[in-house]
Image 1 (spheres, rainbow, N blue to C red):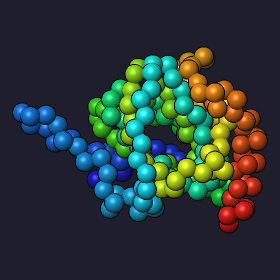
Image 2 (image 1 turned 120 degrees about the vertical axis):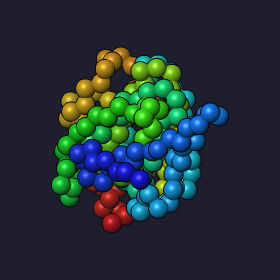
Image 3 (image 1 turned 60 degrees about the horizontal axis):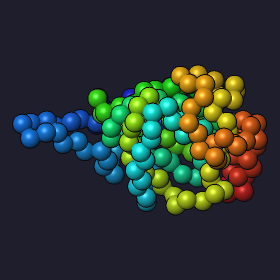
Length: 180
């Protein structure tokens, strides 16, 4: 398994290897040995329409592990962990089914997903849903340093009314203090 560094500490891009023959393709998408940091306890499948943006979200406690099953996603990342060597750094990476990749996103790294076309992604989390661990800010907050390809994407009601970047960061730091 090859891991690629994408410029934000703790975020790992795992290059998955398709095995193709006359019948089609087989791809291993997850093995415990690939992910030392955490073990997934819940898996979810998400279908998104073209021009949908999900996020930007950040978690205090849990890791996300995801792969795109069909379509194409632009993943925006931004590190808000003060102790991280990449604190304040942003990056965008395109994920699709060719080549196949999976990505591990640790707590404290904000992430948002933009879909160029109808797409499906599979993701796992290391903790069950907890509303105190579901923080977010508006996708177009300038502090994120993320330039999305659409100015008016489809958003959930939660993402339309998300906090400011500053409020999200304050809640993140406050939540870490309570659990730390």
